Image (tube, rainbow, N blue to C red; front, side, top):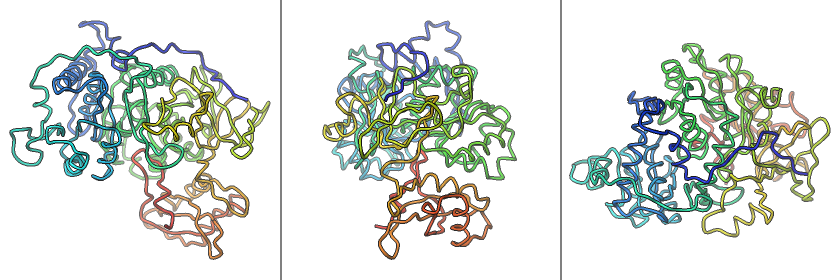
Length: 542
């Protein structure tokens, strides 16, 4: 039994991403044009909406002068900055497709994505030049095909010399091109994801996908032009690309852009710029709940903290809300969904649903979409209960934000999107009588102990409630008999002393006997992706 979004339908225009975001700025005297759109937190440089549009148009014209247009793919390898925002939208404005590359990638990773996507140009910045240059060479790109935005340029000297820089590519003065394509089928972005199974795959997101998702979430966010949004989640990841960059720009809000996460700078930027909204991943929530540095900053401007990218434990969320005296909500999504499929409105749901969603929930299905739960073993659809919460099943989703498919991988596409258009997320969830969805864990991450299924996320939440534990992750590991058991990797608070037995006893006091942690290892840091997901594969014994 499927359950549709409880929110009103929204209009999804047939428009390119550029037209959807910027065409509404109606003329040279539009008051929004002189509002600050972007602030580079490191330098303090401000970019107004008028300047942002002019730079995007100029960038698109420069790409067109280099022969980049409809049907071409351009790699973008850079941390967050106003230059990233301009380059990304310049690529789309030129009619090309942006394949955004993880700033932590090695040269081989970069080359693999460039080769698979058939990118003809790579845009990067000086701090990433070494791996970018090596990756470009491995992918068969020439010196002219590698643009180093802040480099010395073609005729300069030093690192990056011989590669065009921002000034070089703008030198043509070419106007933004008139491009023609069908937004419903033309690819805007090509991020790479592991999907629900296997190696990284190119996620084909059309202009309609990205436009639709902004249209779906904007009324529920309630973001307005007076909001100041802290942007630390990476723009190269779909969460940062859609939920921060595109949605904030559509709202005409101000983005305070951080190139990477540093807790002191994060807190300082909120205080200095009077940020009203912060989008985070759960690891940041741990710091906000526990780190003493939080008390040294005035964070009173903050109205909402929204968590995504991985499940947020309710107790942790409540701890953040209490400490910061602001609303904490969470949502759910994945690259293949552009990314948001389930959301808790910024007000918790009071206006639309006349109630507050519990923090343990990721919220309701977004507008113009539907969800359902399916038993992964029997394929039986799980009914929405008349009261209480349903059984656990795999979450399936259908809506206009579902990707076009995986690039050059029809088999993987068919495994993920069925003939009826339902995308199988690979995540286990439950739904309550109000249509609120609760994520349990990744289907492939479940630990199978003596026939029982143990969700690592549940045990991680228990571990994080211990005052002496700064961070934690749980994976399945073999015991002496070869049986898979829950193993906890623990990072202790500075100066704390914990033993393996103390950790196991603590968890045992909070869970059913079959869920107990049976192995413990103390480590310095939990490996995580740029978007904040725990890299459990890096913790498993080969």
